[in-house]
Length: 410
Image 1 (cartoon, rainbow, N blue to C red):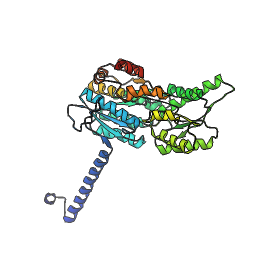
Image 2: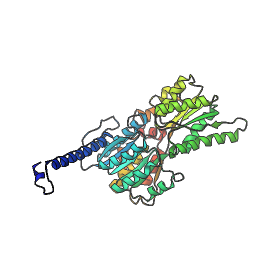
Image 3: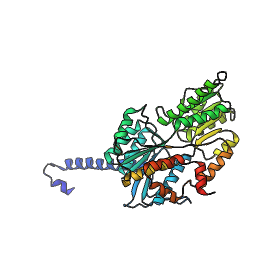
Image 4: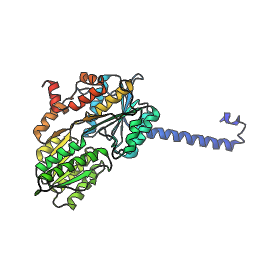
């Protein structure tokens, strides 16, 4: 405190103490903010791991490219698969450090995750947001910090969010989006239900306004409309959607509400939002004693999908798309390296295919080539990183069980 007495504008000891108290409070406030930001980080450092199951290395190198991953969960059935393939790619390339933030698809956490990753020095970020509205903040944060940004499992809807779409298109740092053909996804799953006799289909969404959910809903509706046009004496219908968020409890409550309001309900569609809404839906159907009577289809493969297909609690699922974020990762990697340029004025997208399974036999092949082993070797991942955008898009579109089987030679 002695140096404070030397300042001419300090009159007495009380003033000195007051100043010291204010300074202490400010330092504590800064410290607490740093602690809160650090608490959001679920994984950082160099991501190891390869097709034989290597583990993550906590070390990092200043020469490495740092890519952040904003994801709903890096530990649930789909999220853990996403993390595994990204970690394999990072290890294969050797010059990448990966940092993860789990944001639970909670809007304020989604936007905060981008700020956290940018502040942590990430040169690129890939994000699975929960609604288009979050992308305004995400894009602006990346523009302000000179960080490249790509979406996975998501695309900004030009129709429903034109201003945000134009913001992304104008950005020098928004690289693009990797997403699935969601209307086709919903249409195919809806057709499976209709072909198996379902006529009153209960819809469970996760977030109003989300482009992915809207696309799937559109597809289910098309399947029903096409069926009704071809079968005037055997009409089917979709219910208005119940929204579950991304929790098991939300899925359970939505399923219970639909079963209670529709005595003739014979199918439920927890359309996504990670695996939790499906988990809650399955539990609700089991409690109601309606396993098999109410058929369930969904998106995002579960760890116990084979068992569920055998016991009839799940009729069909689309999934196997955990390589989607791999292609977003490769897009951002190339942007940071300077291989992909001139993003402003363009809206780049990669359309990634779903895999569909509706029987234990169909699941067996998926398990062999996508679960028991990686669909890509380390050398193939290095090859992907060297492709231009058009060739990378073609590789994404070509990935299938048959493609993985052919490349494995088994």
